Amino acid sequence: MGIWVEAVGSAAGLCTTFCWIPQAVKIIRERQTSGISLITQSFFTFGVLLWAVYGLLLGRWPLLLANVVTLALSLAILSLKLRYR
Image (cartoon, rainbow, N blue to C red; front, side):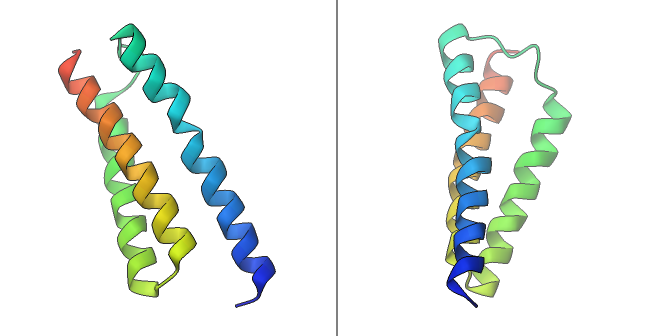
């Protein structure tokens, strides 16, 4: 695959991964998750897990790494949602 394709994939991964950091920080600071749907967060987290597995199976490191980091953030948000019900 061309370097430009990998660059686009990497940039997309950075954008969609790091957008979750402010949400996680906000939840940790405020200890409030009423604005987050448990069902939606659960499905999203499972979907990100599947994307990470897909990236692993394809051997596409930008896809895998972006989704592993997103999975960690999403799991943190999901666990905080369960904790601060």
